[in-house]
Image (tube, rainbow, N blue to C red; front, side, top):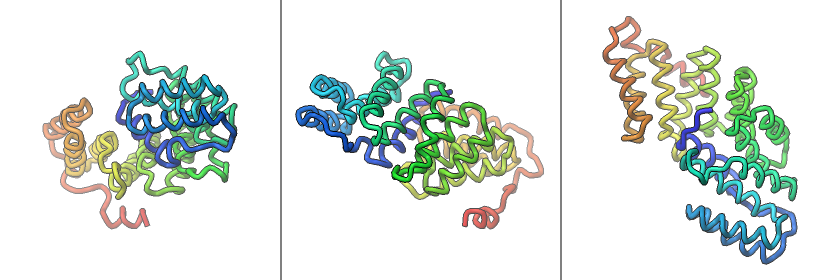
Length: 288
């Protein structure tokens, strides 16, 4: 699986923000360990990951069964990996170990189960991730079904099971239509299956969602432009690729979009180059 830090941050933000990132569990932990964990959690929210990890380790020295502390430790290693998988601080194996210990310590800590599934996906352990995430999608006590369905869909997508990915990701965005990362992944699944029109519609929903951050998903703009070019929607493709380059200028992805835009400009015009393959009216009807 390709690992782009920007994509990972989006995935991690869905994981955390949907449920408060690291909420308290019902398991009884040592009061001293809980107090240290609270400090670690505060450091984590400030982006001070090394300081947070140090406090997590202190909390676990007092009470190794503190599920919240174990879960937070897993998320800290995830955050390190988001900064760069080549970093010595990026340790998926340690993240997996801590997530599993959190789940064992408190099976009711559903966010830890979701975290474990995401970690397994990035380790390319897709079958293990599916086994972990699938029960979470039908758990009525989990407050973020769009997240569990979205991550299950990602596991299927990376495994190459496109039909299963589409089914899971459609359930994800049905549970939360504003889940733009879910729509982006759904677009990728449709694209992999060869359904360009459905892919374009999913990418369109991803970047046109009125939700903070959705319109800045550079990968979705690139994917939308790529599919529009294949559909002969040249003007739309130009706009999408230009937006891709603008939302995060100076990045490697921006350079790639600029290159694709230049290639598109150099290509000979086609009959479909001046019109969209899907009219706005049809698009609007499809989203109602």
